[in-house]
Length: 364
Image 1 (cartoon, rainbow, N blue to C red):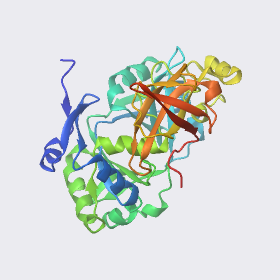
Image 2: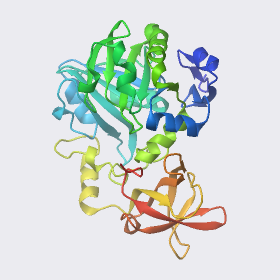
Image 3: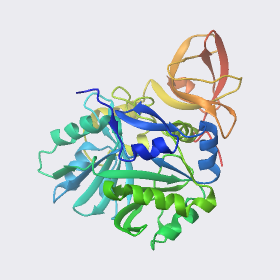
Image 4: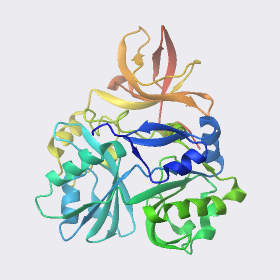
């Protein structure tokens, strides 16, 4: 049973739209409809929609909800106000990361955790393991569809569908309201593209109606369906980590540059060890880089110094559609992690020059 690939609720619709379906994180997902480049630029310059219904949603409720979240996540969820979301991670007990996630605060006693599709079962077991205080947990992953409407034209493309003033939904804030005639839709000012826009959580029964309404409303703005291929190049231009590539069970949040979501104002899983790491420093760091010579970096390519000595490894790489140049992320020995540092990416038999850059890689 283990290797059964699941279909997302709108699978047939994506096939009808010409989506090329591939197995990803245990689900058949549309990787592209036209070309990765075209879809990428559609989101950067206009508006596009991703069906990311494979993501997982857990609700944590009751008087002990915050206590559990504080125990299992690295960020400080006590700072959240109702209607705010927070990027965070679940540290494991050995210095790595179980998953990265977003925490949503609905009320003092109701939160939602949104986790990566490939980790739903692992994360569910993890959160339950630490629930010694009796918080009420619900795995609602199979009940919700999630559409990411992303791009600079997102607000004007879908504003006609909701009485909610979308321009007032700030980044990493959300509201629950009516959307395309459906009540109780979660409209969130989040997304993993850096292009602006929203993520819309809807019950499966309403998903097709809402998807079609978004495309009807967005017609004048040349809205398009977007696949996972462009999702990857968009997040890479921003330097956003992808679980399984840039962060994993063996990378610490401090090494991954996620110190900003690792708050030592509270105790959480393995916080003592991570605090020590922060104070004493780490031997490797995750950096972003831009190729200075023609070449496309890919995951697992060695990163070397000027003398050809291996100093790290590429975790994600691509040809940037916005910048028309090779870009990537990877771990390097700390002394090579400063922006401006020259490094070399080993692409087949050649060591090609690259430069460490401050994230995001796409400026402006």
